Length: 341
Image 1 (cartoon, rainbow, N blue to C red):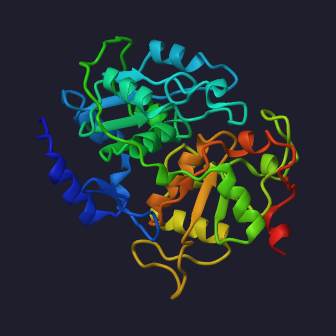
Image 2: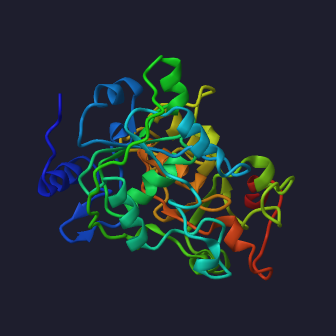
């Protein structure tokens, strides 16, 4: 069965009723105090399987390994979900670092017009239902999920459990590679979703209310090891929420209640999500941002926050790899709790 494609007006009305991370007319709502519906961000393997024949749907395979940049595409050629196109993190979901200036991180965002052309090549318009996936937990696919939302797209979901869950269920794979019919993507970027290095530096030097949460694992955050970037540690006063916290052992997402409890631990207080759970007065932060090594797994935290019913965080795109470009910027080591006393 092919689902009808809603009009732009219908999409806007539906999302403004159910969640406030939405487009309102030609402008966009603020990102403070906004919550979302759990089901809007994830899609299950069986639901996706039911829509493999829907010509309007687009599926994007985002598998990628930092240590082997071409392995993801090789794995895609060896077998992928039918109808999926392939997105390369370095080439499709980021601009070359040199093009963004010497002060950028490892994965700066592509220019909006370049990314819009890429989306059009994949057959994606602003209203195209899109599913993104990677190997399992969405560490890479969440970057495309976030980028589509940055560009005004709202009908994008991440496949819960990725291709590993798809395989475990015995669902079909193919080696066929076909070009999707091209489309025109006319959405525009919402740069209010981004926090800059200057804003982060001002936040930690002026005592502003900006809260920064780092998605890297604890060993990297604390400066015990650094396998990728030349400097170990973290931005002073940042909190640590490893992206894997949001996942079960098999790479599927935890429930909204479990995620809300995990975020409460990260913030040091119980927070109330969209369901109202949490102690009275347990409000989530008004202004916060997520980061990681280069602005990729930080997007996983943005999705996790949405599933937990928390306000939408901004993304520090440059993240740690941009922060350390300037040796004058402060660096901290050790657990975050030690800094907060």
